Length: 119
Image (cartoon, rainbow, N blue to C red; front, side):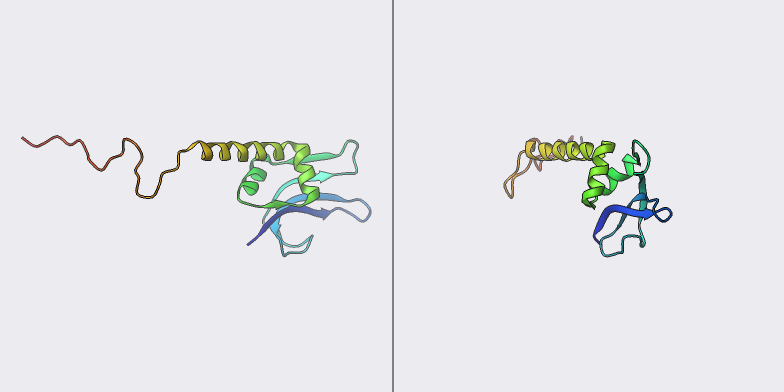
């Protein structure tokens, strides 16, 4: 199941408002969705953007791909920057770990245990 973060149009005719939702890629624009993670009202000055940052980061970390407009909204809300920083930190941590060759053990974790002999 491929998940995408995208906008779902709500509101009356000629008065659009949008919900930021996590939905399956194959579904229609206003069809079923998994979870509402925010809303966007472009008709106010300035535009109102409310995003549940915790849930948005959860879906991004699970591999959900935002649409172009959803990515812009996530950037305005500051979620995208947090996601990119977290991804960079995880990559740096992975690269900092020494890789072991097959059959090698980590230093200090030899197969011998230091058990006391029974007397």
